Image 1 (cartoon, rainbow, N blue to C red):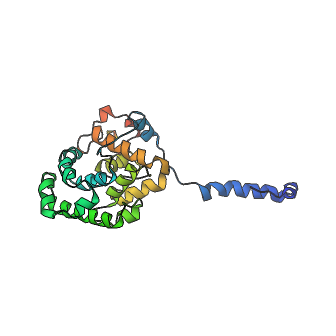
Image 2 (spheres, protein in one colour):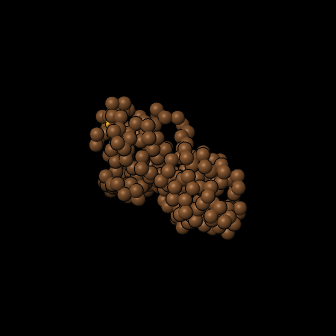
Image 3 (cartoon, helix red, strand yellow):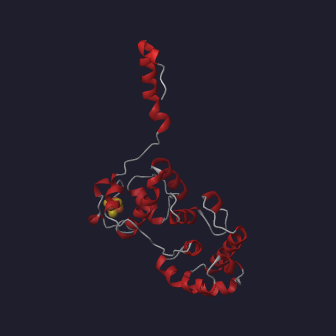
Length: 231
Ligand code: SF4
């Protein structure tokens, strides 16, 4: 920061410094919340947490689209049959929807899901790539904010993934007072440094599955009992 040295000799220098000191936090900081509970939980989880495993970007996002209203385990069981026949955007884009429905039937909502994944494959095949910005991703068939954020996390970009587990744990720990997924996402985006978004998402998601269940959470085993706002 450049200073005019002569101003140090009169009283105006003091007021300039005071003004800068007072205005700096207001202009440059984001409001951060107390993340002690998250840090404690995070220290007890492995560095890499994965629920859906597929190294191929296209296949990964298809798995995420298919995971709505079913378990990740079921998706992992069914998708090998799908990808054996349709491994990429090009092959899936020209698939007959009834043939896709037949394969993914065990996942539930198979008619809508088949339409979505074939529609998604057609768009990606036309584009020639999968977008890497949330605003573009959510324009594609079957892709909502949760799916888009899962994909961003998968490719190593900061992402706030609001699923049912994350939303519940955030609410109980007082990280949000909202229950609407988009509002929860915005609360976290606003109050948590970007570099922590993905880790926070994966860790609290895992904690919700393991301990802080929707019905009968295991509060006696909770690592962050004293931080819980809604036990
Ligand atoms: S005390 Fe119970 S409800 Fe609160 S965060 Fe822990 S497990 Fe969840």
